Amino acid sequence: MPSATVNGTTLYYRLEGSDAPKNRPTLVLLNGIFQRTEAWEPLMPYLQGFPVLRYDMRGQGQSAVPEGPYTPELHADDLHALLAALEIGRYHLLGLSNGGIVAQVYAARQPGGLQRLVLLCTTARVEPLIRAKVRSWQLALEWAGTLGRLQIALPWIWGRAFLEAHPEIDTPASLEQMFLAAPSVEAQHNLMNGFLTLGDLRPRLANIKAPTLVLSGEEDLLFPPLYSQEIAETIPGAVHRVLPGVGHVAALENTPLLVQHLTSFLEAHP
Image 1 (tube, rainbow, N blue to C red):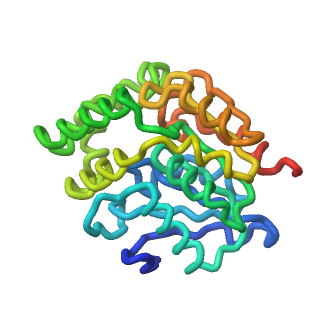
Image 2 (image 1 turned 90 degrees about the horizontal axis):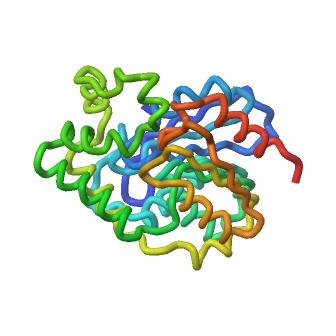
């Protein structure tokens, strides 16, 4: 199992695409809050021309579960240390949801190797409505464990069109699969408590110099397109696109459409 001990923790990672052109920057995939590297699997067949780094943040998947909370700043420190340990000098960042928050924090530090930034279904701030949503997840976890949290979160995560086409998502068998892939209860608390430390990143986003694409799901109830529009209006030169008929899990709900936007942006000339 490839892992790196960095910044006081151990992170599991997968570095793929060794046959990609040597001059191409590495595409780094930043997980959503409860995801693990496997969540990007639908995207991987489309990324064969890119070197790709995906990893579990602290508390996720096969990475360690140190003492929390896991704040966006701490995740960004971990990312910096992992890139240094793997000697990755030039890279793109693609961050989903909480991973998109980490990507914003990191990019605002103006790291030298960052080439392009893609922010997917994310936010730059925690305001009362988002706080109330996440607090409901915390209470569900306290009252009914991981399965309870999954059930409460389900309508916030999946888009209407996807759930109509895949009603099996809301079945005991599907929830059991999600339960088996979820972080431990301790890690979930650490991840959510860290997320809720986020204030408002917008004053820092003007520092981002990398070309930036911001994508949102039309049917994303957790982070509706308004939040992505706010980000795009703050980052100099950023472009915002809305993915029609897509909820919060864009990489799974409409993989070809996401890939179309992603590859077009990453392969564009400066």
